Amino acid sequence: MKSRAQKEVLCGELHEKFGKATVAIFTNFSGIPVEDLRVLRREIRRVGGEFRVVKNSVARRAAQGTDIALAASAFEGPVAVALGYGDPILPAKVLSAFVKKTEKLRIRGGVVEGRACEAAQIVSIASLPSREVLLGRLVNRLNAPPTQLAQSLQAIIASFARGLFAVAGTRATTTNETV
Image (cartoon, helix red, strand yellow):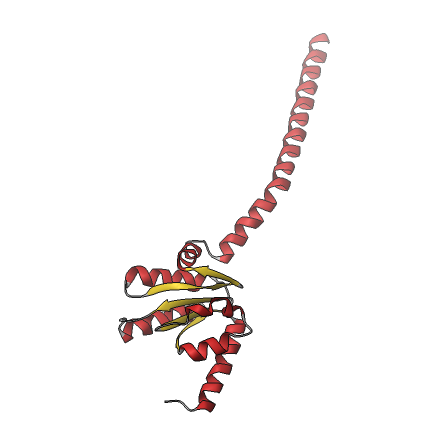
């Protein structure tokens, strides 16, 4: 059993991590083999996050003053938290894939960029493309009107030039015929 000082240090570390996290996904991890949990931790670490089993009382206290406090009711029973510090979609994708592979893990809900979400919302967030893909699509959409305008102006100028060449060609043939 941990001493009070150790629990306070742990609570302080969790509070700092909860404050930095862009996403926190709460899961029920009962019945999952230890090796599967290791694999899950590695996968979430690979995408810039972490997966921790937390004690409910310490987690509730650590969540105070952070966005995670919005979903403090999730800290009941055996709880593990997946925290993401960058793109909030990536930890959700990893967890969603793990849930499909291992039916024992259950997503309870979470907090994504300051908004409380239910399990179904987390699963739908996991189906979104990554941040880079979404930004690329946005840039493409913003770039489309100027590109279309430039193409239209180019087509008008090209049509005008073809017309000039056609007129010049007909004048050249009519001047040659009259001589």
